[in-house]
Length: 347
Ligand SMILES: Cc1cc2nc3c(=O)[nH]c(=O)nc-3n(C[C@H](O)[C@H](O)[C@H](O)COP(=O)(O)OP(=O)(O)OC[C@H]3O[C@@H](n4cnc5c(N)ncnc54)[C@H](O)[C@@H]3O)c2cc1C
Ligand code: FES
Image (cartoon, rainbow, N blue to C red; front, side):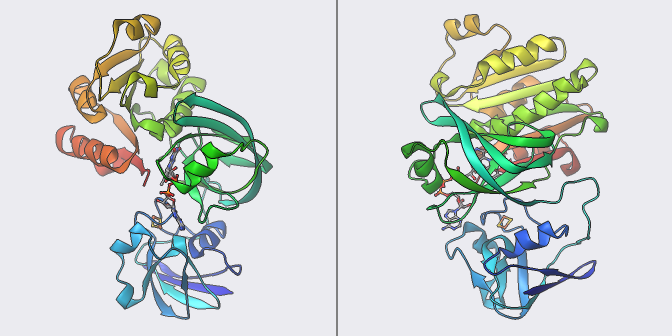
């Protein structure tokens, strides 16, 4: 069917397959439709139906609290259309994504599942055609038996990847989490849509970088730090990484952080913030390249970063309360302009 979108920058038209989400169909046609989470929580993909019918695929989507359903508003990332329709999208939209990869569908197979902590797993997805994506991007994974796709940030980055690497923290009673942790998922087929997301890192911007992550929010940061190291970005730029977890048993990637810092000991710093317990001397001794502090990650960042915000580009990812606390700190205390803050809210 044909979907027409009237936007602040003109009218566009694209094809949408039966049962396909309106946002994904538009994005794979190269339209820069507005979105953030791509999975029904943030409200950014709000649009109004001017003509035609739509089906809301997730009636309880939290993002619906940002739309006026009585005025025929919908979330494009959680709606399909049974026939042709016309939408009004209150945003500037253009056709063609420049150097960015146009998102698309791929079939994947799960491989190499590793437990990183009691509630964090890492796994690879081998995809049936290579994907080019930036450090900091994410993909939507759709598993048979779990309604609705889930967004996960890639831990790797590549110009032509056959494998995507993910790290997922178990959410108590979460549907995808239960599927992932309660089954032997190695070898399972999974559908992938991506790459997505704008919280990306580009060394050519020549900025010092600040990464603040809570829990599995570290996923996208790992790709950013890896890219920074691979491109020798930290030879002449600073990298400040703050990783917040509750207790020492929730920490992962310590060996990886240690080798990043070993490569750039003068410019790259990684600090782990433990919110619920004190740091033990054993931990400090085992990982001498890493700093450990007690406190919430945004509070620790605020203390450690005072006076160091020159030419900084900040990346934030993790659970919504952590991201909100970090954004408040960056805007009110660090006085960073919105253009120098990129974030992914995991919910
Ligand atoms: C940009 C982005 C990147 C993320 N990256 C990571 C990451 O790298 N690692 C990580 O651990 N987590 C990440 N998350 C969080 C992740 O997407 C899931 O929300 C989380 O894993 C919990 O999923 P769940 O199914 O276990 O929980 P649930 O509570 O069952 O579901 C959580 C989410 O799934 C979707 N959903 C739930 N039910 C439905 C339904 N009926 N129909 C349609 N959609 C539904 C919604 O988006 C909802 O918020 C990211 C989130 C975003 C937005
Ligand atoms: S992009 Fe649709 S609700 Fe977030």
